[in-house]
Image 1: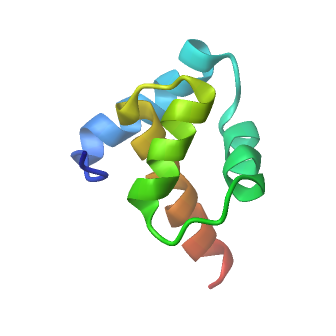
Image 2: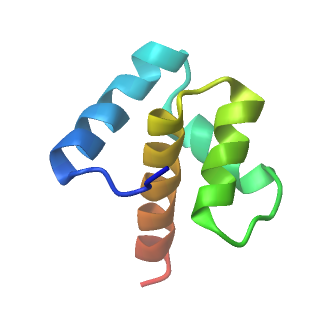
Length: 75
């Protein structure tokens, strides 16, 4: 599984997540932050997909977006 969608695909996935899952992005970020402490993004997205019944595409997009937001908070 790849965590690297094209920027256009990534944006579309992130935009659809609230409608598809019924949860906003900040809620998903909290879920990721309160979940198991994985070293690799791929492990995090696999856990998110399996634990919360998400497709791997949506899970990977959430993890990628969370990592981007986390990096921006530290600057």
